[in-house]
Figure 1 (cartoon, rainbow, N blue to C red):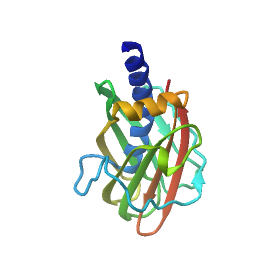
Figure 2: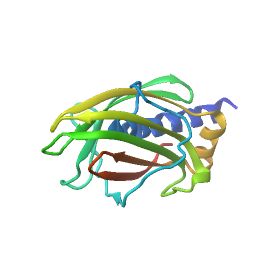
Figure 3: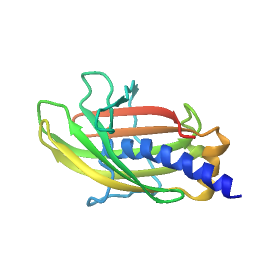
Figure 4: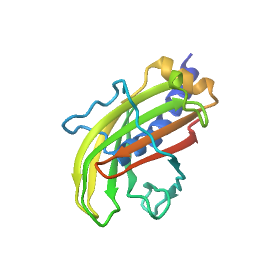
Length: 183
């Protein structure tokens, strides 16, 4: 029984690190208007961008899509807060030459590789980031907690999760989708 919890916890840790990166990318965290972990009635999307995760020399991971994407993010730190809980600190960057206003991020984590079936959502949340000046960033820490049932759903999918993140502003919407095997 402890081995199952350990495997589920390992999956959650790695998955949450990736998910938190996506959440940080989108600015999810303890900010006014945050709905972290609550159901999202309408999840806006645009054609998924192709992500290119890059491990930086300082141990953080940078995720961005094509050079022309209006936003990018880094996962700055992931800390364990329990067997199926992770505190993830991430930073959202405005890569545009102008101020981005009305920024809201939407994040969904699905159990399974390349899976966006709404029945397989194990975590979702939103956050109002607001306004980011050109070249500015927004850093936040988000707590991602999965139930044991949700962690088992990831385990039943051979440790794969799919993270779908949409950053919506007054002028643009961009969606990122990435699958990772977390255990």
